[in-house]
Length: 128
Image 1: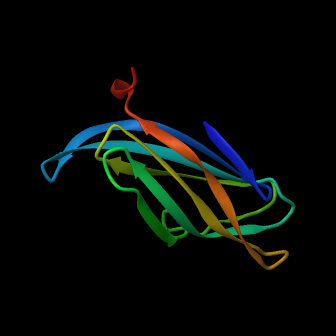
Image 2: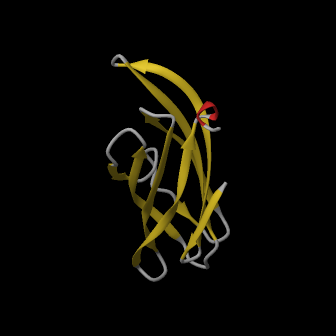
């Protein structure tokens, strides 16, 4: 598990290899990840959007931006957390992701970033 804390918001990431399959005559490697966003601050916050950098060892880095996470913009009270599952397709058995969440603090009315630590993907058979 990978973790990082920014301004009292703790991000924890757990990854797993889901399997391989062919898509458009190419082998793809499916990875899943579970992210827990824990509010260790004393303020109420909301996740408004996300920014990802996806690294595939056989491709260019891909940048992805979007609203919320999996269709939600969770409000997280102090001492509470929000957990969600998502996934990533790569064309190689090794890669990584990192990024940030754009957040809003309801108490200070401040917008801020929470950094997501780099987490790695590796198919078990690719490790030696």
